[in-house]
Amino acid sequence: MEIKNFRTFKKIAELGSFTKAAQDLGYAQSTLTFQVQAIERYYQKPLFERVGKNMELTQFGQQLLEHIDILLSNYEKLEQLGLQDINPEGVIRIGTPESLMIYRLYPIIKKYKQLYPKVEIIIIDDQCKFLREQLNSGDLDIAFLVQPEYTYANIKTILLKKETLCLVAPTDLEGEDFLPAPSQMVLFTEKECSYRQIFSAYMQSLNFFPTNILETESVEAIKKYVINGLGISYLPLYAVEEECANGKMRIKPYDSGIQLYTQIAYHKNKWLNPALSALIELSVEYSKGW
Image (cartoon, rainbow, N blue to C red; front, top):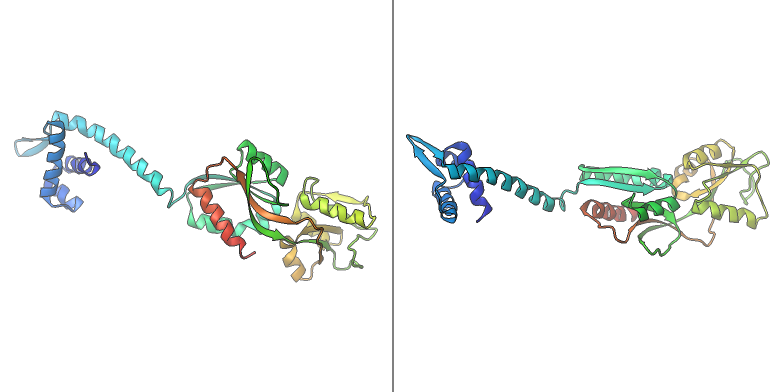
């Protein structure tokens, strides 16, 4: 039995007339008659009866209509599952360090929401180590990381961009070693941050062991402190390009030999539903312009 026959029967029952239903559906009246007769042959029972000048549902027709309402409602839900490939929806839980959230992701998120407004996005700001743990536990669907290229047992990664990292200092700092003046601090990111470890190794290579230290998770706070002459730090180039171009700080690219990449990560067993697949595709496309 074709679903269109049930839809036709429901429309005739709603409007109480073959003629009105034919006009509403855009069918010839003979087509509607044929579809109703197909249902009647299938069940071996009439659907309509004449009561005076009126056409009414038989008792069986009334019972069938109740079931058809449920059938058509469920059928429409099944059709919507297929449409999700075209119009993704649902909730995506994204993990990212603060620097990527501020300087890399905002145009991607903006475009994504324009394309897929039904997708709800939840962003978790954390260190890369803890983001990987949340991928393993299932608390995150996907993460954007800045770290070396690793192979993990349970996590798949997609490399987006090899990043340049820089020593950053106030404009009045003298010398090319970018070591702080006695009155200045060394501004560290959190201990688990991959580029903090590179920064520490750089200073040790110069036999400099800082004692005047400030530690914060906020890249924005570090930049403010550097601009205002409080100290030096080591940050991704993408986070300080604007300030450098405006003459607010000095920068010096430093290649430690350890390559860091912005990358997408997700659990190897994660089903990449349409919403996640669309986010990955958009991120890969945007990363070509970084």
